[in-house]
Length: 279
Image 1 (tube, rainbow, N blue to C red):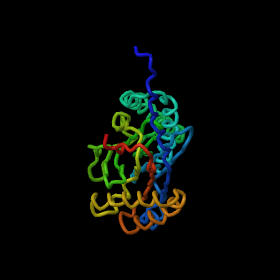
Image 2 (cartoon, helix red, strand yellow; image 1 turned 90 degrees about the vertical axis):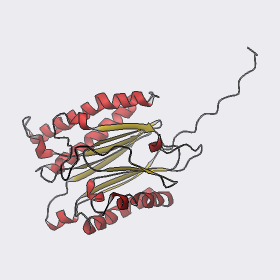
Image 3 (cartoon, rainbow, N blue to C red; image 1 turned 30 degrees about the vertical axis):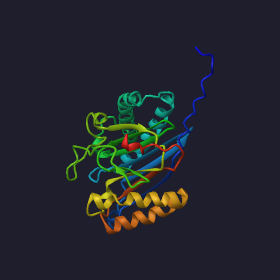
Image 4 (cartoon, rainbow, N blue to C red; image 1 turned 135 degrees about the vertical axis):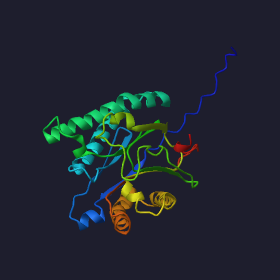
């Protein structure tokens, strides 16, 4: 040993906490037919964690609105608890392992329990409350994403790059999709764990009423850079106030379906690094 002290290692700058904007609107078709909306959205922040979830209750399910509302609340509760439990886990593969099991299993089982409580009947057909679910949990070290059923999840970067971090549901065909009401639904819930973004990044989650309002996926994906610019140049609260009007217009001119839509935005920070979805 030379006896000389090694120069101190420069600590990586802390990952910025993302800002949030969200909205949920009743579809134009539902308004015309005087039917309740069947989509839901929820978000919460605590101790450096930000959780976001959207759900789309099935049109054929009598209590789809309740099923979707229960889905997003269950997701937020479990995501925040999960984030606190694994806050000291640094390896992404270990976080993914914990997310795959037991998080997926507990989340779906809790949704089923709450459906039974709402119905007052443990033998209720879960299809009455059927719903999809998409969620995100942002922490200082990782970004956890999950999706069960149809809907859209996109990650946009400042350089114009765009990624779909979770593969399309193989069970999705026409109006058929995976659902919380199906047997072994937890196994169909796809999860992915990525590093927390270290440069300007926008994550978008939406129920399928949004993308169905566009002629193609390519046209729909053009909303990502537009929203990135909105979040960059405006205040999140101002953007959020504009969302209901934007989504109402999209639904009226497109699918006529309900739309639940939320965004997490990480501003530009020092240190560079690749956007989360490219890892």
